[in-house]
Length: 156
Image (cartoon, rainbow, N blue to C red; front, side):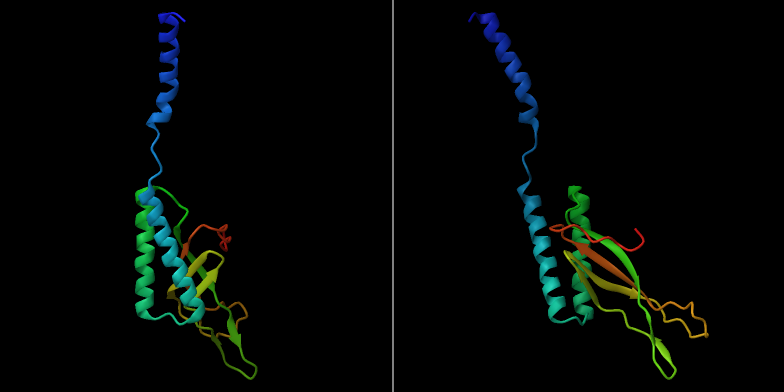
């Protein structure tokens, strides 16, 4: 092999290798942060199953987790852990013998790899004798951790 052929082969090899050399290695810090967010979310899911009562302290912790997830998403551009809003209408309780009322919104909703915590609930509509009344509107903040497909949201 003469010098010109060797130089040409070396130049081609370098050109072909440059894109691979410029690729970023996976950020292990981002993966560690993602794992920590998933672990925190799973711990909240376990707690919600054990005690479905949503205390103010627990709600504050979940809001901090949602804020941390949003910040992680903004920083990394990834969405394998994400926060969404979801609203649900609860049905009215129709009691035989008269009065009807709205069910309270559950503090938590757990569906697959998504945990939702109650952010706010609307007023119960007044019974005006109409059959068209809806129940209370419950607004949830949901954190999805991405191991299983995200459940379809109503109205999507």
